[in-house]
Image (cartoon, rainbow, N blue to C red; front, side, top):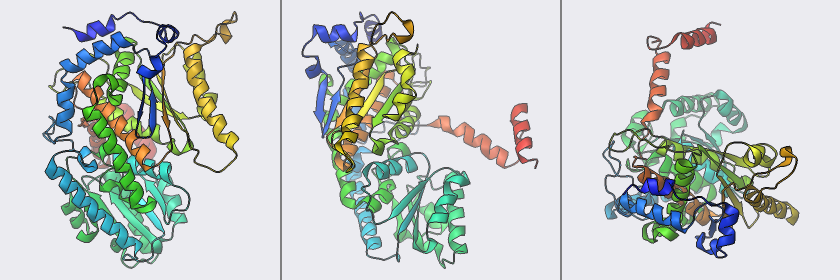
Length: 497
């Protein structure tokens, strides 16, 4: 049976009608897990659509694929390996889980040694990486810092010197720890920044800059070749992808800055979501339901984007993190078997911070011609000690925006008419701590995986990032043979001075 056809031909009801027809709707599409309330009731998902999507999931063997993901099977066919980020949280092939725990024990020992002064007086940390090697740690640091951390930590990814130079001007080289995060330990941008930092250390009179470098990598031999002592290399498994790696030693800078207990809480929350994803029937499985909604709006309503708005300043980097997680994973034009994908792949993920976004992009969301599913995130417990009006206003604005998107408002003045019937989901966290953040990120990982299975694509390779790198390397080497006339003119104009 063509399950997609059944989904696409399903009669559509308005959100208003769905609520009127089902007084229990919020119970059917509202779920609590690991200190987070997930509200899918303001989407167009109903019982009939849910049943059709469950049949599609069964046809795609989603249950078997979830089991394969969490048991160490080589689920990444193009690269012939497993995807074992859940093993970092204690769920997976027994040997992989044991190895991950041993490496975490090693990381904890190094954290304790640094805190005890083994590398001298440390007040500053420069964490260099790019992609998941930077986005993950940076998100953790922004979301979970409380303001009295022992170390000032800067995460640098861009090779633009405007990103690194202000940090070097602010930090004391003699009290700085350099952390180099690179899965392959060959990432060009990361090592250009690393050379600049070590040169700065030497210029500032640090006698042995390499004595204050920590390497986080799946290729420890390359770190040794680069000159880093083996005792300061924290490996992780090659089967852990970059955008899924914050749970591994890539999270070292966050664990050192925030405390190993916070990092362990992060793992606990993620493991709880892993178990939920593995064991819960699809009609109550939160990542799976989110994927069903994603596919409905992408395939049936032709929504090309999804907007994410965090009504909490601490989560301001979440849209950036999700852009890589979802668009690098599922931004594909072929299926896992190499055949062309004849459906929309990942939506374009974008977003911002409430209430700022209300005075910018929400005009389009309420009255524009594009239908954009919106995701709201908020936290019940405030992250500050200012007057209660701050947080009360923040939360009420969040809830009001989702209500307004759904309800709309009619007016005889077409300029003041709001069509409504615009979908949203809301994720309401009890508090923003290690456990809830771990569960939240794991939810997004599993949602991304479920979407990939429904589409039949491989979410664990990212060959689309390679061509631009190859052409940049060719330009750096002076080879312009592959370049078009426009690119040649731009290069000559930029470097003719």
